[in-house]
Length: 270
DNA sequence: AGTTGTACCTGTCTGC
DNA sequence: TGCAGACAGGTACAAC
Image (cartoon, rainbow, N blue to C red; front, side, top):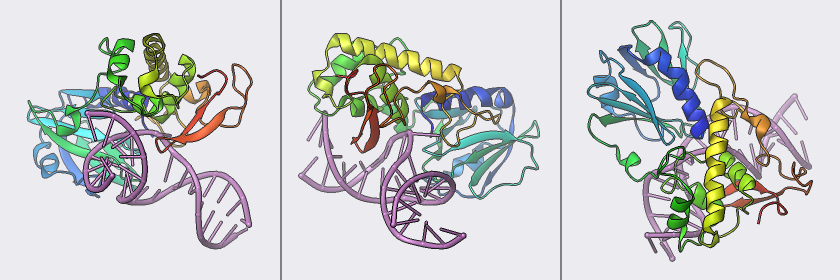
């Protein structure tokens, strides 16, 4: 489900409920997520005040003095702040109880997500090899051009490589390539500096706009307060295979690229 | 080092 | 209506 805009929407929705609150208890109903939830989460968090709620790539970090809870939503994860008496459903794996009386609940039907622990002052191994944040100045066309030299993989797979740039998943890769006029099949190493400049600008504009819309709700994404995202109404190619291009009217092509469903316009994108 | 294929898991939708 | 099969927003890891 969640790419960067959905994770950022989640972060922004959680922060007002979590900042300055203390964790009063942890309930683990199903610790076998993608990786087992480490013992530090239940042992260390209770009694700690939440100092910050941050996002790095598609990870959320809930900071306390001794360390941070590191969360990834995988494909189907969701975080909500709920009244304490809310009965748990079958996929409600973890609750963090707060001194506000509310509960931060982690739900993930497919269990591709994770809840890990990062000691204060440490960087978790999962965060060490990540590329720059797409909305930062460190990410631009020059960065994409330099990183892509010698790479034969399709530019769409390159753009979704979290070591190249973080936060771009299947939806926003398709949309960004469309707006930059680049075929997702083109070898990453054969794209010019000028076109990578356009691609970087498209990534920034689309992610920023999706964040402003509260993310994309295709099936089940909801912000922590239960609101859907509205960016779906602004998708130009994702999920529209076989339909007419909104720019030129050509039938949108679809194929599997890098094991991911892909849609693009063969006329607008070269 | 880059690329490809596999694996993890459940819910939903499609077509027979 | 039932059921098998395809498919889904992610990413670590092994093998080449």
